[in-house]
Image (cartoon, rainbow, N blue to C red; front, top):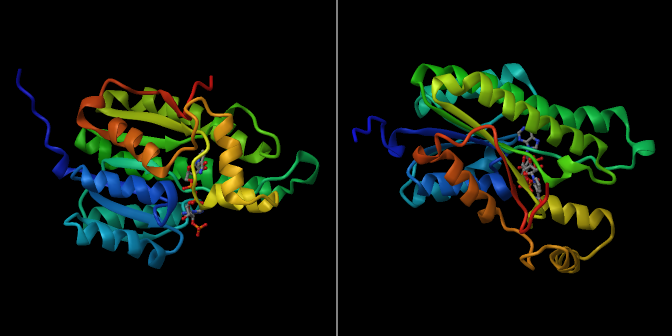
Amino acid sequence: MEVDVPGPEARVAIVTGAARGIGAAVATRLAQDGLAVALLDLDEDRCAEPAAKITAAGGTALAVGVDVSDGTAVDRAVQRVADELGAPTVLVNNAGILRDNLLFKMTEDDWDAVLGVHLKGTFLMSRAVQRFQVEARWGRIVNLSSISALGNRGQANYSAAKAGIQGLTKTLAIELGKFGITANAIAPGFIATDMTAATAARVGADFEDFKKAAALTIPVGRVGTPEDIAHTASFLVSEGAGFVSGQVVYVAGGPKD
Ligand code: NAP
């Protein structure tokens, strides 16, 4: 059978929120898979460290500072990636923040900030990148949702954003499929990162105790690592995953929905 697609070495990927945590692990894994990777985050200097590690290991990486909730800045950043690395055809929307509070204490700012980064940011980045994907007649979009999409106390803003990302993902899959573009979401459970460390600190728990308590509720008996998510992203981005689209993959050490 003839296979007429360029190899992964021809691909350029953008990973948002790539300065640390899950985003840094995904960027590193995609570089190991042979993709050139643009690491986007609020602070370009903080992306420089994971980008330098990728470059030192023989990969291709570019650090770009951008606020994903700002449409003008997003368009400029995506164009910079295209100019410096080549047309981006892989996008991992991972940037995120938490502003947890019970509903009666949640401010409009808490709501707008979380919806702005997660949901609007995913929309803006996808809109900016899709034109390169459509032109290439090939693309992969992977959006970070969460098990909190199913509802979580203290996270009205975050759970709404993460559920919204699932609907957005399915719509992207429907609209963009005819151009050879897939869109899928990963919904992680508890992953040990600065984000979950901050949650532990907010509730006054020691992070090690917090992780041990979480592991007791997880069927595989441990919390997740950023590499667990990177492995799933690697699959969804791969050449062979072109018939997997519009899916939400719960990566949570057990069933969730
Ligand atoms: P993290 O360690 O807090 O990293 C998130 C990164 O996103 C940070 O570098 C942050 O920069 C950046 N960021 C925030 N706002 C941004 C903006 N407006 N524009 C660009 N970058 C921005 O988080 P993580 O734990 O790796 O989580 C990554 C993703 O997975 C998030 O979408 C999160 O909701 C999702 N997720 C995580 C878990 C978990 O258990 N960790 C579970 C489910 C889903 P600053 O440091 O400057 O804010």
